[in-house]
Length: 364
Image (cartoon, rainbow, N blue to C red; front, side):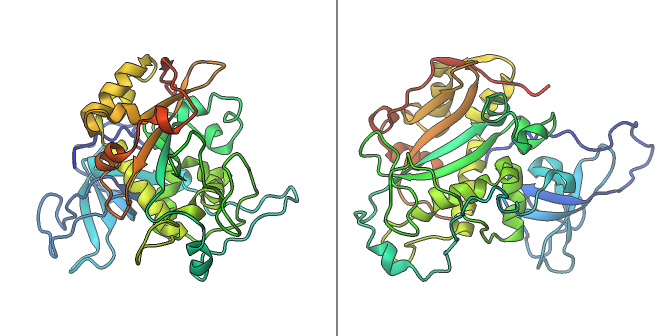
């Protein structure tokens, strides 16, 4: 995987480097963005040949110095010692204060849908009427600083906490992964459980809770900051319940853990691409649609830019989101370039149009 420059401000950098290396204890998680070696010494000694799993959250133990070069993380099951050293540029440190727990149900009295993903609906979902392997997808990736300037975003909890140094200040954030038939210009299907799928123009209450593995929720809280306002429950209810309903064989149907792990794997590739480099390098400046298309073509193959819609806020002209058309089976190690290449041009499958140019909002 291509190297990624992690643009995170570390905590506690107000003092100069001490004369001798001094380990600094840290609390939180390390989110792996690359499959780096995890060694007992900082640059050697790796019993078991351990490598980190991309987009997995590991318990953070310490950094080797101030500002430091390596983090010490806990790798469950690693032989001889579960405490391992990894280079800082292998991923992202998410302090305890940057993470959120499962949001509480809405207090406004709105009736919420129940999460019924225990695996006993396969017969009903198999009768959803989708042709085998017929659905494509739209990967909606937000530029969070732009979204947080919009009327819809500015008062959300995740936007009130947005500041320089956070992952979402200079990386793409996950809005959602939307199953879509790609056969017309409306996003469809949505809300596949309970009952038959409906058009995505509808908006129903989200599940009160969804069960996610703790390490996955920790990673999701970084890459999908909307977790703080319950976005993950909304996206699962509206789009995730339709995920893989059309897939044939053993992989038919899905659950929240699979849906979000595979979504985060796609986001890791986007945030390791020249598209991300283009946005990060030009924060505070305008980008044209042509520049963004060229970056997609360079990262994911000729024509990839035609599979993307650049969304801008009508009031300000700021870039808020990318909608990326995908086609093909998504598994634990999806190939984003192949999925983009197999999809029809976005102009043929979506009624939205790209803005010609927009500002890449920078967090000051």
